[in-house]
Length: 242
Ligand code: NAP
Image 1 (cartoon, helix red, strand yellow):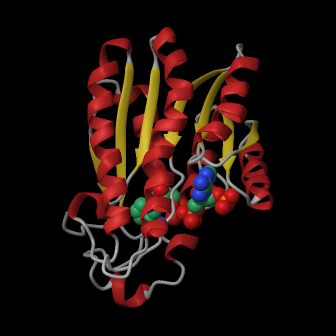
Image 2: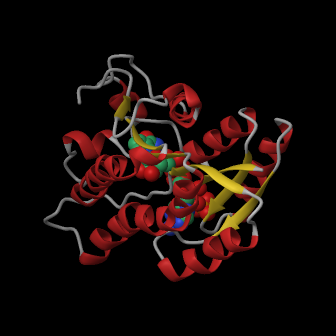
């Protein structure tokens, strides 16, 4: 059975990716941190597409937890192959560096950057053995151009972009591609308290994007159609300068 694992699949962009993977015929592993009700809604949306899946609760930033839950799943489900991994879980804790405390710095780097390491480590081996895999990392415009008030988030996402490019070269010979998608402003819980009207005015398309628009690009990288593309970062931002 071919599976797609999406971290942070309970809400927002992650949920839209889960639904898209279901449309592509994948059995969907929906990771979440704490919001079981939202994760269950995602699973229902996956089933509504005629596919199936299951919930996997773990904090991507906690390596022991990732090993205990995801590592054990991989070990106990040898007939199921994770072909697609989408490292999507992320948080933001914005502050000017002047005011930023060490915890805000660490939390954001831990979930995006350590999370990439912790989760990818558990699934890469099987991809290499099967000589096929698709890893897609959700980064951000903030990690490309840097955004004031987000030194932690920009650093975390820029770090994942570097890791994407390095890992792509390590595993290319084994049929595994590693790409990143860099959204601009997307309408989710993460951006709910931003002044949408004011910020949308900075976007050439004059609006925030939708999670489904991001999921379409992820689907391309997850598909066989993108077989000669690796180490690439695709911006999805309505024309915002990067
Ligand atoms: P969101 O609506 O806030 O959803 C965040 C998701 O991540 C939830 O499913 C949440 O699970 C999960 N999550 C958070 N911390 C986690 C952890 N430690 N372990 C496992 N799962 C965790 O966010 P979003 O807007 O969809 O963002 C998704 C990704 O896109 C993030 O990497 C974000 O940085 C990136 N991005 C977003 C935008 C934007 O404008 N929205 C722009 C650029 C990049 P629970 O439901 O259990 O809390």
